[in-house]
Image (cartoon, rainbow, N blue to C red):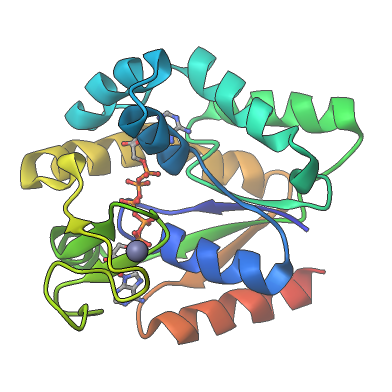
Length: 217
Ligand code: AP5
Ligand code: ZN
């Protein structure tokens, strides 16, 4: 299956993508995670991306599209993929369409995770991530680590993302409304959008997404 996950920052895209990718046996491709890996490895791409990310703005399309394309061309993505955080504006959606057309493949669905703004702000403010593995995600109230500051899975140090400050989150939400939301209409015109209520326990949101994909498939 080839799926795009869209939704405001903090809606739970990464959380759901990790779970859905495992169940659907496709790789989870997160452009945010790819940028963060470049930042921690101090690559040129990481240095460039960091300045945009810390301000809550989108990294320029040219480098983002090239990075996403490169990842989608890896052998494990042949059987499908779950895109998390890409595309993020209409020109990235158009670039993805071009790429899929060249490959002769199509998206199966675009899952639009919906959560109210006050909830996503709470989720982001309390999020803590493992330094060893960005899929080990915790929350100070919703998903507490057994020992404060330590990852339950691997013992790594938990940290708060630089772009999770209150001020940057406000910019990220604004960028989401102005630049990313228009892709929902773009995909609606292709009949691909399925809205998923992202409130409630993580497991219930996953179940809703899987049920919706079954209906679509
Ligand atoms: P990115 O990493 O994609 O961040 P984002 O879209 O802002 O989304 P988040 O990672 O903040 O949230 P999420 O929806 O994944 O929520 P999560 O599952 O962690 O992008 C970061 C930056 O990179 C961008 O600002 C941009 O600069 C750059 N970038 C990335 N892609 C780009 C692109 N294509 N083009 C240009 N620039 C790009 O959940 C949040 C918290 O809530 C967690 O603590 C979790 O435990 C908790 N939680 C999750 N679900 C639930 C639930 N159901 N109930 C209670 N708590 C929950
Ligand atoms: Zn860990």
